Amino acid sequence: MKTRPACRVLAVALASAATLVLAGCASSLSKGISDDGRATEVVFPDVARSAWQKEGTFPNLDNLRLVGAGASKDQLYDLIGRPHFREGAIAVREWDYVFNFREPSGGVVTCQFKAIFDKDARAQSFHWAPAACADRLKPAVVPPTPRIAERPAALPIVAAAPTAKALPPQRRRIELSADALFKFGKSSTDSLQDEGRRELDGLAASLGDARDTAKLKITGHTDRLGSPSFNQSLSLARAISTRDYLAQSGIPAHNMQTFGRGMSEPKVQCAPSSRILLIECLAPNRRVEIEVSGER
Image 1 (cartoon, helix red, strand yellow):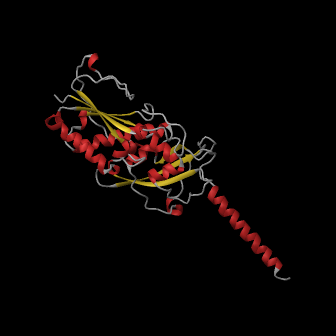
Image 2: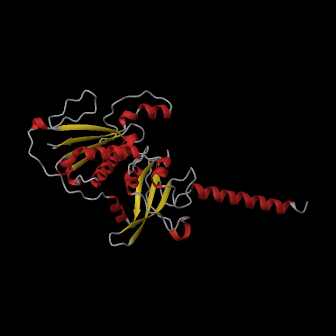
Image 3: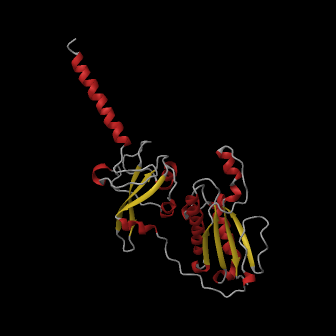
């Protein structure tokens, strides 16, 4: 009988500890996070005190540029990895990262990155500390393509439908499957698959002596899976990676233009189905189109 008070005290202590743990898992540092994923005050965690990966990581810039409003936690995990702080619980409304970027001079700059989620666990707002770190995502400046005087009738009609008008003389269009070029959901040159590399190598070889004069218009397309903003970024990133790979084959980068159409120009429409069957059905929509001119 004398042990009951002690047991009762221990039970209360354990319950309190469990409550604190659960509260810690579901809490957020930033203040006033709304249902639409905005905060009245953005607060970054202390790296030295609470980061489990204090040294941070060197992110894949192509993947980091794909992060946008509407991304799910699974998509963020796939693109930039799990958060670097103890924020893995379902109820957590923000994820924090420590990213390192190399300077041209050889130094390294460390930045903190935060994604804030809405009530449906979709990332909606993003923040950097220092704020200037956001400039790291700006793409490299590519010299503008020289303008060539051309009669209006010679301009191609861009259409994704099979009934598109024939291209004017001295132009050809090549359509490459994005599934053959890239791993699913990926866009960096590192994620180019062997089949895709062979196809791009074949295209570069077919230009022969015209590599220095040919003009390439590269357009990326996606299926409708994912948010419009995510797909727009993905399609453009794939076009840019295609350009960068072809540039390594001797085609001047300033002779190539890149565009992203996202999911706006589908070739097929598919009825709702299981995810596996839907991904397979929508495959024709995931493509990179390359229009080549000036070979003669």
